[in-house]
Amino acid sequence: MTVKLLTNTFLGITLLVFQSCAETIMAKEDTVATQKKASAIKNASSFSVPVAGNSFLTVKPSGASEVITSTKLGNWTNSNTVISTYFRVSTTGIVKIGLKASVPSGTSIVKVTIGNISKNVSLTGSAYTDYTVGDFTVSTPGYVKVDLQGVSKTGGYFADVTDVTFSGTASTGTNIYSNDPSYYYWARRGPSCHLNYVIPTTNNISYYYNEVKVPVGEDKIGSYFMANGFSAGYFGMQVNSATERRILFSVWSPFDTDDPNNIPPDHKIILNRAGTNVTIGEFGNEGSGGQSYYKYNWSAGQTYKFLLKGEPDGNGKTDFTAWFLSPDTTTWKLIASWKRPQTSTYLKNFYSFVENFNPENGYQGRKAEFKNQWVRTSDGSWIAVSGAKFSVDNTYNAQQRIDAMGGTNSNTFFLQNGGFFNTTVSPGSQFFITAPTQAPNIDFSTLP
Image 1 (cartoon, one colour):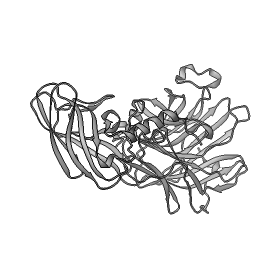
Image 2 (tube, one colour):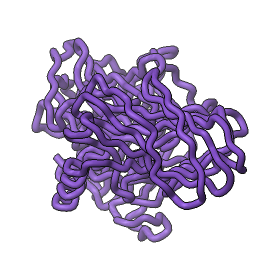
Image 3 (cartoon, helix red, strand yellow):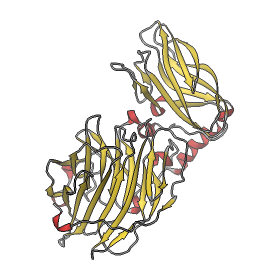
Image 4 (tube, rainbow, N blue to C red):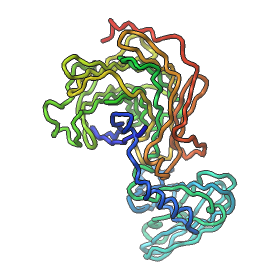
């Protein structure tokens, strides 16, 4: 299976979209270029970790002006701000830390911390200079977190910093960090990961059913937990801000364009109907189509049910309809029903994924649990799903960042990404659970 990652922006929200067809679920990597970069990292004696692709403002007081740009840490004026840079090592031992920095005026003292050990370094001079901070001990292979915090300054701000450097015995194995500028944005978002469910029948499938729970504390801002993915779109729930959450359902046009205004009339996604208080619109940027979302403040720790229908309309088009059920009601909520032209198909490619669409929060972890998956054939038979295959996105495959994993817990599948954890699961791993035995009890005649 291959995954093609697309980013769509609608009303200011950036989303990850999966292009149709199992053969295109992951875009091809430039294998030679990736191998060269990996070899360069492995064989170097000293390593420069670009702030632009590997750093975050993990503590940013109200009113602080610090920013991570496409080239550096800038506007560093607040002594309470903490800037954290991450890189991964496979060997324990000594790591010699340094900074590449410029101080436009005056002299600054900066504190550098790994674990519970801190060292101060004095910075001065407007030219970018490589400064040595000192030696730290890495006792466990995996991600190393380097914190920077300003101590004192005589100029207007502490410094501009482009890189955190490291060497030493802990650097002699395989090291992982984002070293490709084309990946900096994606690396700061973090790698996405997916469950590609094993469909237990070759018959036509009209419905996908899935139940999703986000554990308490795993619902970080910028998270999208996609429940029912299919060959023409995606359906799940997201955390848009501290005060807003959404149930999102989108179907993209069969016409390949980044601008929905360029879609010919006979290729446009058509709205059949929408649920009450559901916002309807179009999306563009990479791929385009119809998008619908329902503002609903779902809660971590609760289980939500997702039902998707896809059937040909008999006239060369296909109707895709999504319903959502919260635990505080027995009535399914219609999100929307879309008609996709130039398409005559039942549901294909049942999958789920977890992603972060806010790069500023990419250092935070998130997790979702998926259980009780079923498919319903066009002749009305419910069949349980008991297997899934784990896959990752191009950020992971290019070894720019690898904190993404999947697995099972009892009879539940899960996906986890972000937070720079050290457990790894090989892409392509297959997971199996005991198949559920109680099919969903749904009265289809009463669905809105």
